[in-house]
Image (cartoon, rainbow, N blue to C red; front, top):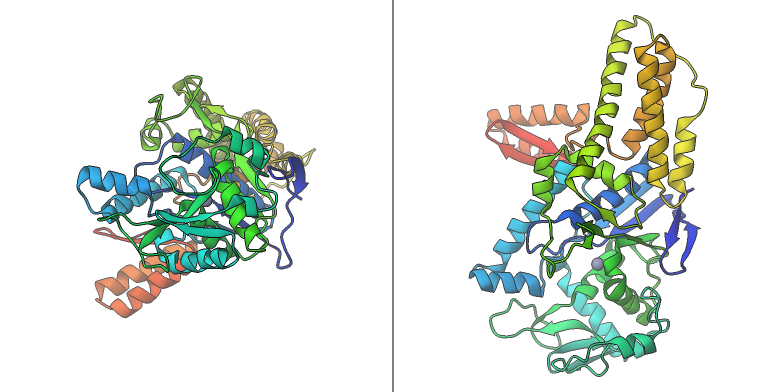
Length: 455
Ligand SMILES: [Zn+2]
């Protein structure tokens, strides 16, 4: 059973799927106002590894990750460039999924858009106001954090110490510096939705609490995100649920940041590295392996030297896969041999220990080296048996399907049938086949060459 460090309790604890055996996972997704950077790449890879590992272990996962498609940064960029804000979000979201596809990151089971949940957000804010936990002032509706028991749990600071460190915000009309905005009243020309407090838009913290509870239900097992989201974002998501008396995430997981040149990546330092540029320069799996080789809670340094070292690791893995194909083809009958040790069990033991991928991958790469040597020597049966285990473990981390284009036979067949239906101008059948493909988890794209499907 998987044990993970819980930011709320500061202890490593089991993450137990509820009654139905499905582990419900919510991960804060992107605010779509520009291209993804290396930090986005890391967090999506961390949670993709977690999800793939759980599924490989036989645990079903329901993975929800939102798209924040209304936000101050989106509006600012739209105004700066004199373009409709929807242009910015559509363009940025397309860049996001394209980068995820290149990294072989599986699509979340659901990727809700904030703008589609505004009525539910208005409803939640209304409930907070009627309970006396939120108040309406000239520029918006705010949550009064003094009304929230245990505020500061994820920040790991008391409300008093948070208050004394707070910057005094002279513009906002809020009552206390730690209070945060639930509803921002629209200024002229800004996009807005109707509400009892006048036209405006939801605050970011309200988006996530509404979408996670709407799609996963109360008391979902695991909430994740980058460690920069602990406070205030996650603290404030949780605060709204607490103020409403609703059970929120049972367990909180946070991944470490990306460093470039020994410093945290940040706009002010100017070292923010575009994800697509990195993916252009190496096999995209090299970034996945680099992420796997550091503990998810630790910061990682990303440099050309480290990416090329990771590429060499991939070469050893790929040459094992090739050697195994050749050895299997050269052997007329199935070669079965029990390996001396159970690599999969040892790998699982390390992954279950707070997702200790660096130690788990060290085992896998030791096995890759041994299996390569056995296949090159005379112990083909032993090499195949160990190699199979090594490749199975590698697939649990997404390293073998990271092209993102692994397609099942059934899906390939449906896509062929759809092309035939389109050739015959049978749009009803073509649409039904597209729906079927989407229902089994594929994204469907029409290209001049025919139907293109990918996960
Ligand atoms: Zn969030």
